[in-house]
Length: 402
Image (cartoon, rainbow, N blue to C red; front, side):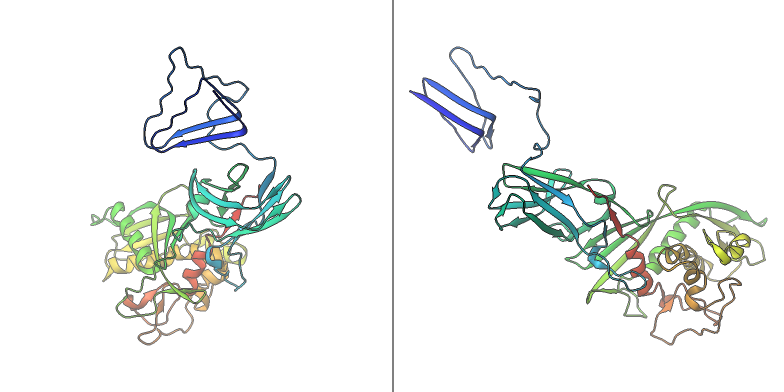
């Protein structure tokens, strides 16, 4: 008795036991796969067992061979999650688009997959029958099957898109760079929450005055990062305002913004200065201003000053940090004039405030505006919805075409 199998591929999956009894058994194939899913796999012979591999590529493959029958390509080269519009209101691509090209044969059913370092995070069936010469367009919104978006999967080059019928497979790398390199964005669409990480470069600006400082640089650093989190997040957790969320495509999202102090892929550096003298010193962050505004940048140092002699200075230092670092954020999506004109509330060159009284309670106080009142209402001060949406938009990806 003999068993003879001939095929391009032979795949045997064993859940418990597999027995094949014959005097002679022949299996001819370009590829033979035997999988024991739960129990041991045993090959035995009363004489000898011979397993041979011939050819140039007998080693184990981490990924399937690229099919010559079909091909997948990335089409669009920009993408913004949820289609968050730009500052001017222009619509953005909210999908990453692919083309599936049939080079040979006919495919009655295909599966489109997205994998994160080999692990499937999204899949979609293509039920349409496709034949040689057909081009099929397919889109992906950037979210996993668990409705999670993570920009670092693109920027760290971890994603591949794949199309397969189970035998023939084509794959393409899906990677890109954020428009702004100092931002990472994660979105949990189930819980309608966005988590933003911004990389800042805070440096020790030293001490002014002869009195011993009560805070070290690490203390100022911590307060500065706290200020970013407090005044740039819109988490619907403020006691005096109830509008601290953002709306995207008619849906409300909470946004949490956290700063990380690093020199890698970060904003322009800002010095944190401890001022123990009697003289109040101004904070400023001209950054990389250009054109006429560069006149202001020549004289204004990039610093956030802790004025130790002032009242409520810890609270004011946090707010000031959020404001000065906010200039770099706002400039990125709104330009120099919008940022350093304090969104129309000051002269962008002289930095003098216009007449702009605090809005009445319970309206928000914009952390980026100048007000003609002598005090701020800390509990109502927050980055505006427009500016936080602009921050989210800064995560816009330029997809690398393949």
